[in-house]
Structure formats: C-alpha cells, structure tokens
Length: 281
View 1 (cartoon, rainbow, N blue to C red):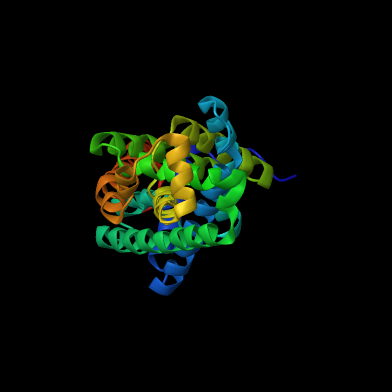
View 2 (cartoon, helix red, strand yellow; view 1 turned 90 degrees about the vertical axis):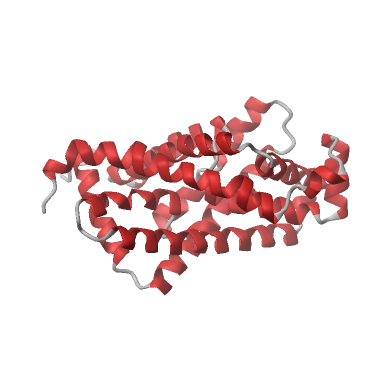
C-alpha cells in the first residue's frame, strides 16, 4: 500500500529546489503563459470572494466567507498549473544551493510578476464587462471600488509589513500542498493558511493586480461610482485616488517588497538553513 504520510520538511526543501531548477530551464514564452494562468486564477478567486461577501455588513462574517472562497485561486494553480510570483520567491533556495544563479531568480521572478499582472488585469476587464458588478443594484461595483480605495491609499509601511505576513502564509500553503499526497489533503493544506491570510486582511501583490484595476474600471462607471458615494460616502476626489500611480507606487511596490521578504527571508531561508545538510550537491 502506498505510504500516504505527508512529506517531511527536508523533502519539501529538496522538492522545491528541484522545482526551481525546472522553472529556471523554462523558455520565457512558457513561463509567461504559466504566469498569465496563475494571475487569472488568483483574480477569479478574488472576484468570487468579493461577490460572496459584498452585501454582508459584519466585517468578521464577510471576511470569513471571503476566506472560504478565495483559496479556489491557489487550488486552480496547484491542480491545473501556473506560476505565481509569491510562491516562486522560494526559488531563492536553489540559488543558495548553487543550482542556478541569482540572476536566473531575478529573470524568472520578473517574467512571472508581469505575466501574473497580465492575467489578473484580463480577468478584471472581463468581470467589469460581464455584468457581475451589477449584483445588488450595483452594490458589488461599489464594494469593488471600496476594496480598491483602501488598497490605493494604504501607507508604505503598512503595505510592506502586511505583504510580509501575507507571503508567509501563501508560501506555507504552497509547501503544505506539496507535502500532501492526495487531492483532499492538498485542498485542506491550501484552504487554512489562505483562509488566515484573507481574514487577516494581508496584502498580496498578485491579488492586488486584480483588485485595484477592477476598482479603477468600476470607478469609471457612473452607476458604480454613484453607488459607492451613496453607500460609503466617497467624494469624487477620493474616487480619483484609485489611479495608476497609487496602484504601482502606493500599493504594488511596498506590497511586492514585503511579499519578497516574507517568502525569501521568513520562509525559504530558515527552512533551507535547517535542512541544507540533507540536500545533494
């Protein structure tokens, strides 16, 4: 009978080093397509969780429901395929092991980052065009604006530290999914860390590649903008702050830096340090 015990931490480190070797050999077009898939899947998780919780006033209940729905994005990546920037920050382990260069890590992460963005923004466009934001007489459109507004006006340090916390949980979810040996185990391994990240309200750069562009598109719609003003008391000036500059400079840069620290320094480094003696040279 096949051993169904989860893989050990040492096996996970060895497995991720090998996964990094595989990624480093991918041609850029393949890597780019895999990145688009992952960005789209995370965006679908984000849009679905917003649809599920947008009309719930109690913040705890709303976040709990969102936390149940959002993990579908990472599940699709694990089971169908895709390369997600936040999980791929752990490629640094292979560079520390001298399996490939640090420049290869930068090249791979840069390709995945921008392809994740393409996939996420594509889904944001589809969501704003398909009529989903009309739910609850436009309240979902207003909620999409609200989410984007909060992210586009966050302070640098809050975004940075929130990004660290987020990617600790995302990387743990990826590793736990690798540890499980059947589909059920992988689902449970993914759900609980991602559930914690959503309830905590932490910042994920790829999810924000959906949330903020979707909010920008929604804010350009007079019906959704008026509904946001009605429900949340926003002014036209506040809605104008959901823009490209705040998307990149206020949110994406500090969140991405935090995600890198969370994945590389807080997860990959201690795991590699503890188990590097078990790795084959």
